Image (cartoon, rainbow, N blue to C red; front, side, top):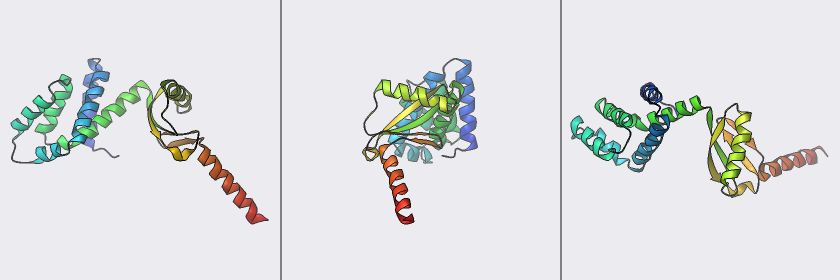
Amino acid sequence: MSRSAAAQRYAEALYDVAKAHGEEAVIEQDLREVKKVLEANPEFFEMFASPKLDTQDKQKIIRELFAGANGHVLNMLLLVTEKKRTDEVPDIADEFIRLSYENRGIAEATVYSTRFLTESEAAAISESFSRKVGKQALRIENVVDPSLIGGLRVQIGNRIYDSSVSSKLESLQRQLIGRSTKL
């Protein structure tokens, strides 16, 4: 997903403030919640794009809606509203999380399996694959895919590690078909 330069600047500024106050984890969690709220309510963006509401009214709504959020997150939301960049908030959240992960040596991974992983299985996968990509840990999103038949497929960035039964069967099929055409 491409992010605008403005979203990157807002995220970097917010991350600098969070780091200075030792609040990276709290702000990251609040940004995840803000993003969930915004994604679940697309009409929110429509309302904020409307010229019928002035900036002060929009900021009042934000203060009420996100009253429990960290003060720095709330200030960022008020600022982007004033600058008419409310539509950038999800990208700001994503960029903040990326910066946070980068600074903590964490990579995001998607693990495809035939069933949900247990916590110990996810921890073992994180430990094993984080070393392969030079990170300290992985934040794993587990996706259940019964078509794998067995095994795992792990995607970290643009790298894919596939030890699924279905991929091994496909490989075997290609080998067998290749041999039969040579006979």
